[in-house]
Length: 343
Image (cartoon, rainbow, N blue to C red; front, top):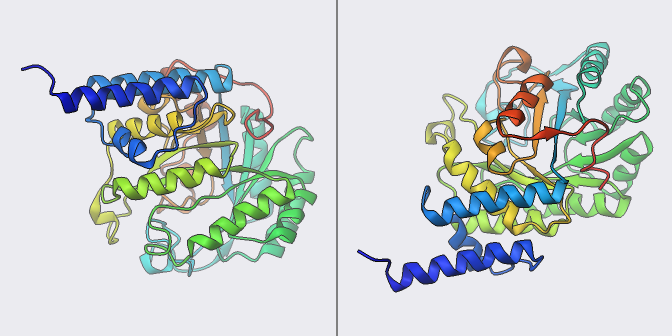
């Protein structure tokens, strides 16, 4: 049987949207973004979308991918109760608060430097005291090379706090309005958006992502959060799936397949303007890299997707392993301080 008139129309709309991305025509129609997300996997249109996303990623970053690396300042139960997170008090994974020894944090950051990470992130749980974060981060900054790009991944903050992050040497932050925000977390969306604005006012580059994607998330919510990430004008966006934590309510819902995530990742890249160079995915996988993910993360210390206190003994990958994944996706990795955060 031949294609129906509806199928031909949908295919034509998908092709027009993809062509527009190459011609820097912003894709602003939420309905059309939803149609791209709902294209059947492995269809001609989905394959076309993924191929186009890869070419767009290469064009946006001049063919050079990056590996960023993260370690943590603390581990323990967090009353923000993001239900997808192993730190959430409601999930009962970690029972006591621990501040990780600073000499160990510095040692891990130097290991990341030596391995060639393009940026190094310091992470803390959402309830970690901001002044303590600043104090310890300043010490870490002093122990790293001057050219090393340092990124903060911490709780929400205001403009004055954002300026403090700049003062102690952070060039950017990772922050996200997460799927299910305000429902599967105890954090209002507006608080996240206020942090976005604080970053912009203080001159901090923002990295963000459409995450954590679970099987229950609707097209409408994916579109809503995707538009938020695009409009934040970040250094990178992308998409990452939720890693199920066994024995928790969200864990029982399972995970989205890597094939589905590659498709979602491709939609994100098509929706982003070419002025946004990065397109991330997590956890690292070659299918995502082949579909246009040009940013992956290595991890040590505590990890919100891991039940191990030291993720290097669990889910966390090394810089070398992330480079290998990108190589499997036919990427060349940039050598030097992150071009994404300095774009």
